[in-house]
Every structure is written in structure tokens, then in C-alpha cells.
Length: 258
Image (cartoon, rainbow, N blue to C red):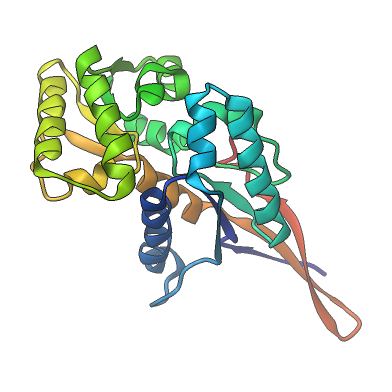
């Protein structure tokens, strides 16, 4: 007779930028102890990365099909080594999310962020990220569907934030001048009624670490990682002769968004 058990899955990370992938991996490892109930415990994690220039070239050419091909290839490699669920800590790449092909589920980065907004009953939030993220539908669409207003910085501010991300943060450069500018943008959003601001760029929380917060800041990468830690794979253990066999029977659809 079967004996159902649940386990934290083997998590696959589709990496974009090095800083973002590193923060995602660190979060999975450092915050897993409280979930797994054992010191130094964390799930099995596999990361796959293509050279970043391949993604950047496709993005600059507005070739989102090309972005999706790279993400799909990463997904296939992660599936081959046993990943049960896949996450991508890069917000911009999610513009190609609907085009990605995968035989295992992915958690969309906007879903745990939206869940956090809804849990706090916030009705108006700001967003910071690349221009693709701030001006596109990755977050605006799910937030709109939940009747939550989204505040976006003015055009000049969006362009400067884009420059900071592309030319500083991706390369691991974090300056006080850039942090102060982002802090000013957040403060302006707060004055315009934002109850929280989504840091929809993996590197922005690293830039803003240690600076005072005018409003609550939602770290998309850490929220995504925590969501993956809550994911469960259910298996059924049963005996066949003298052997104990593990057979996966269901993957929880609680976090599934594909």
C-alpha cells in the first residue's frame, strides 16, 4: 500500500545576470533552514546560464522569440538533471515567458509579488526595473486584474534607472549617487500614494541595502525564491518485492503559472 510523502523539489534556476542568479541561489540556501527544519539544509539546486550577451543581443533587437528559445533550452537542460520546478530571477526575461517551452512547471516572478501585495491589502504600488518591466505588462497586467494601481516613474527617471541597471548594477557596480537617485524616486512614489514599491530588478535590492525606506520595498527575487521553497512534490513510496520504490504522483499546482 502506498505511503504518500511530500518533499521540497529540486529547484532549477534559469540565470540571466550573474548578480541576480547569485542572489536567488543564496536566498534558496540561506532561507531554507526554517522551511526544512534542519541546520544547513537546503533543496537540491541546479543553475544553468548562457552567456549574458546572447540575451542582451536578443533584447536589444526586440527578439523575444530568441529570448524564449534560450530560456527553453535552459529549461530542457535543467529538466534533464532532475529539476522539478524552474524559476528565473531576471524580471526582464519574463516578457518572453508565454513563449517558453518546458515539460516542468515554472513560477512566474510576478505571482509571489502579487500575492504579497494582496496579502497586505495594498491598493497602489510603485515599480522600478528596466524600461521593459516598468513600461510593459509583466506586472501591470496581473496587478490591473487585481484592481491594484501601478505607479511608474517619469520618462527621464525611467531612462536613468535603465542606465543604472544596464551599465552599473549588472556589472556589480553600486554607487552612492545611484542609490540616492533611486531613493529619491521611491520617495516621490510614496508622495504620490504608493503604499509599497516593487523592486522588479534583481540588482536593485543590492543597491538599496542599508538605505532608509520611505515605503515597503518588495524584493522580487527573494519573494520568488521563497515561493519555490514552499513548492512541494508529492511522492508515493511503496514496496515491490524487497525494494522500496519512490514514484512521483503529483506536482502541486499551488504555485504553477505556465
